[in-house]
Image (cartoon, rainbow, N blue to C red; front, side, top):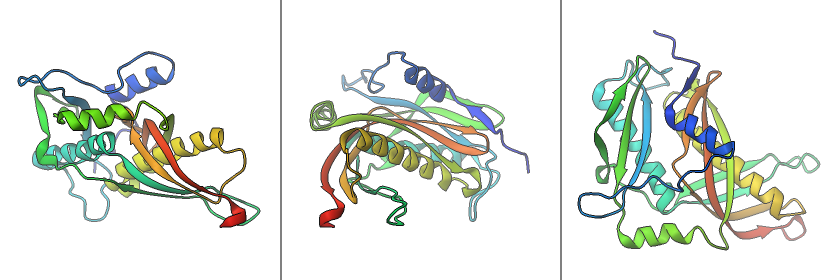
Length: 235
């Protein structure tokens, strides 16, 4: 088995690092479609020879690579349009409570509604890259625009998952990054550590994925809305 690169940073992740350093960039990748509609457009990639988890295909065939890119982009674009509900319990050493973060998509996007951008595909010895496009309707674009206003707040985070999890590790890294973003936001909003927080979170822009030091590493910019804060005294 060929050892995968342990320091793979795709172009999208490099751009995200530049944004984190202060460079400006659009909230979401958009371009006019032939029908005049706005597109969500972002680059995604899949491992050609990943660390195979239980039941994972290895080596990965062309059809599976395309399917994985479309499935991941459908989950991400769904997270930009509708987002997720979350339940977050912060770590508390005194009370022996472990940190817990539960995330559930509000609505799913069918990968059949997406398309690989023509002429925008490329491969390296390690990965298959492609830009993916999705054209939301006017009501969904309006919904996305609403996330820019109160009570939604901006947050960002970096998450990791060991490559030994196989392809499932990619999703785990995204979820961990959203956990880090929510945790960072709450630390600035809540002076007293809550017992449980419920809310919603959306991707502010397509997140980035890389392999660094044997871990899938995701960087996200998000918008979050706190719905309920349950303090210890009433829990």
